[in-house]
Length: 321
Image (cartoon, rainbow, N blue to C red; front, side, top):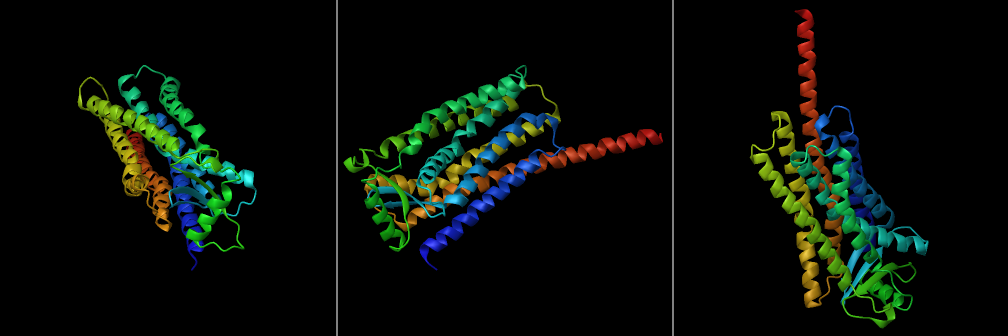
């Protein structure tokens, strides 16, 4: 099997699975029998799932992979799209959606913190506060999504590099977009440095809020200052565990390939086809995050079903009496 064919099959399958799993979570979280106290958290889970579904469907369409060769960081599209402007839009959209994987993370933590420590806030106010923080981060990073869009004079060099590394024949079209660490006049002096800087900045900004709010939530759940029923307290603890898992999933899944990427920047070496390890990790994150959410949703549903059955039994007993 040709390398390009393998990549198409593998990444289409991976993204299809991610879309299906997230869709299932989305359906499960909006089914009726879920604790009423989880209404706000439904929205947080829904936004993450919708973002993952769009990202996965876009990946199914474009089948994008990464390539690092000769200090050129390339975004290669193996999908069936032929319209160039649409391809360029897909490059920007893919980068944007990848950033969203960690830029949405603080929202759920902030929502839970406000629910525990600012219970007098309305649901709308909590949502505005939580997602305003995320939107600020998103607005800062959005302009850099076009970093990989090439100038026409630079395109032939990028395409030749991709043909050589990926084994694409001369008769086949190549759709690739590259950037370098050094300034290249042919590419309008664009570099990947600012892109990496903004990615790291948004990462720190997101995870900074995540860590701080997680600590505050943990302390609140351990003290007597927050008055909750045993049922609500149990739900809050489960949701906190889910958030911690979801927050650290990108770190665990992408840690090794991202470390390789950073090492490559420092050393200036080539990863060539091995760069797809990073691609597989990035597009695998939505699957793991969805599975974590699904565990939380199923536990909530089982608890709600159990309580519903108990209340039904009590009503029956009272009627008999």
